[in-house]
Structure formats: structure tokens, C-alpha cells
Length: 278
Image (cartoon, one colour):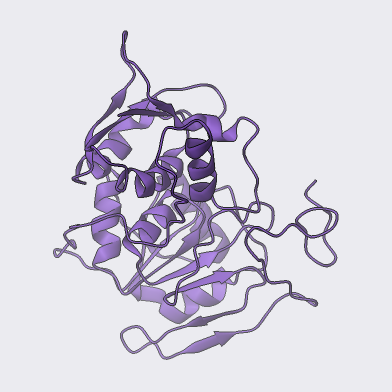
């Protein structure tokens, strides 16, 4: 199958969770830009090494004249997007509706990034990432930096690293050329901590130990599992990593609200004391 996407990098990583189970693979990921996101084609070098490292992906490339698209997966955002569900469920619902994929509801609960070789030359105890979007003001990054300090490696853009250090304190930056390098670094770490950015999607695909800075307005990347914490109100447990000790961080909300998948509260997805997102 030729499966197109115009989503951001994380959208492509989450789409791969469905591709691994579609029969008659490997499949082709066709990249195109439609103006709705930051543009995937100019950043194809970041995503294709990870995609083609997986046996269920034949190639990952920009669309070419004459290409027949079997599933326009990017259309899940055209009237299908619901920020209280998950990106994988929404991809799946759209694929089922247009009869592009079998009648199975894909949930993203199973690992879909396989045979990622941990990077041995400079392993990190704690890998972190934080993009400019999907930030949560209750998440206690400063406490995390103080707790893990020299054990931390930051992945992402140079600007994201600068912004992070300016807010929360200096951490080491680890340059990565693409998401396959990010995956190898995360695989070599004890835990990943980050917001709903593409490195977090990679950590999810690996089903790696994770603490997520969960967005208050778009909590669409919550895949419940025993080794992941999804922090809405700041409350989380920082495990002992290389002698750091355990740190319990309390809720920063006066009235905590725990998100539940597929449930929209009256008035829209909101938290006590905060304006509705509708």
C-alpha cells in the first residue's frame, strides 16, 4: 500500500503503529505537505531513517507524479480530529471508515519500533525533550533538572535546548541527526521524560520507561501502560536513576483532574478552574 501523510513528525511515528499490522506489507509512506502542519517534506531526512529501519516499511519518500495513494491517512484531521482521543485511535477510525485497513481497532498498546540498537558510545541515564508546543505549566521541570542534573541528555533542536536551559537550568545537549538516532539514545537510557513531541512518540513506539508532560489542551497521546506516567497536574514519581534517589512530586493543582480516554466532560475537555477548550 501507498499510505500518505502530511502530518508532523510525531504523526508519522504514530502512524507506523498501524502499518506494522496491515497485511501484505511492507508498505510505502508517502510524504506530502498541505499547509496544515509545519511541513513534513522539508524534514524528510529526520523521519525516513527510522521508518525504513522497520521491516513493515518499504520506503519513506515525498510524493511523485503518478503515485496512487491507497490511504490518505492525513485526512484523519479533516473533521475526524478529537483532542480527547489518541492520534493512533483517530488514524485507525479514519482508516476503517474509508476501508483502507482491516476491521480492527488499533490502539497503540503494543510496541511497534523493533530492533533499535542502543547507542553504546555515550549512553544517557535520562533522555529529555521539550518542544514549544504542548507544554503544561504544572509540570515540574526545574525539580527534575535538580534531581537528575548531570545524568540528563537533551534531544531536539538547538533552540529548544536553549529555551529549556533558560527556564530550568543547564543540561547537556546531545545532537541527533534524525529520529533513528533519537530512538537509539532513548533505548540506551533508563527513562525518557518529555512533552508530546516526536521524541515522546519514539519512546512510546519503544514502550520505554517514560514520564510525559501531558498537554492540558490536547491530551491525545495517552497510551496507558505500567511503565509510563502521564502527568496532568505535575504529580509524578522520579525513580532512582544511578543513585539519584526517589523523588515524589506532589500535584500542583488545587483540584486535580485525571484525564480519561474517550470521555468528554460537560462543556468540553477542561480542568477545574481552567477555561474550556471548546
